[in-house]
Length: 305
View 1: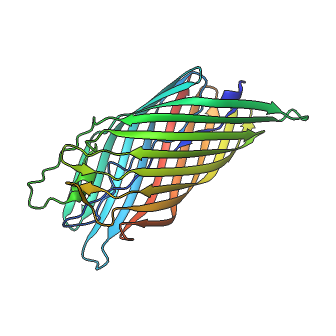
View 2 (view 1 turned 135 degrees about the vertical axis):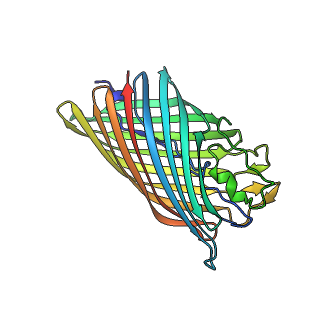
C-alpha cells in the first residue's frame, strides 16, 4: 500500500456565520455558513456524497426577538490528483428552516459551487531503525466560490431584514479562498493542521459577508483490522468572523468567533470510505452573545480510484 493511501484525512475547515441588522439585528447563520470539512486522502481521484446538518439559536438581550435556524446540505463532491496538484469540486443542495419572531421561513435549492486547487510544496518520508514510517507534507492552495445559488431577497417587503440574506441557498457573491494544510504521520498516529482565509465580496444587492479565518488541528490514530482501517480523530476548530456590511454600512455586532471541539471517525475498506464527524462549541461570541452555535454533524460516502 502506498504512503498516500496510508495517510489520514486532510482537514480544510471553511465555516462562517452571517446575520441581519434590522427587525432582528442578529437573526440567522445561513448560506455563508458552509464547511468544506474533512477531505479523504486519495492517490488519483475520488467521488462521493455528503450530508451536513447545522443548528443555531438566537435570543436578543431583552428576550423580545429569537430565531432557531436549521440547515441541511446534501452535496456531490470529488477530486482529482495530477502529480503535486489536487483539484476538488463541491456542488451543494441547501435546505434551510428558520423559525423566529418574524415567522417561519423554509427555502431550498442549489447552493454555491466551490472549486479548490492545492499544490504539494513538499512531501518527506523517513523510516527509523524499527522501520516506523514518518511522513511530513505541506499543501498550499486557493479556491473560488461561484455565485450559482439563488440569492435574491425582496428588499421592498415591509418585513425585510438583513437577516433574510442568510435564508437563501446562495450568497450571490464571488468569494475566494486561501489555505495551507500540514500533515504529520508517525506510524499509526498523526496530526493534521489547516489554516484558511476566505475573502468575501459584495453581492448584487450590496450585502457582503465579512472575511473569515479558519484554524483547525486534529489528532488521529489508524487501527487496521483485516481489510478495514478505522481512523478516529479528535481536535479543535476556530473560526473568526469579520464584520458584515449592507449598502456599505457595518452590520452591528456581526463579527465574532466560535471555538469548537471536533470528533470523527473514518472507515476505509479498499476503495470505499465512510466518514462521520461532529462539532460542539467550547467557547463562542457571535453577535454580542445573542447567537449561539449549537452543533454540526456530517456523514459522507466516498469511492476512490
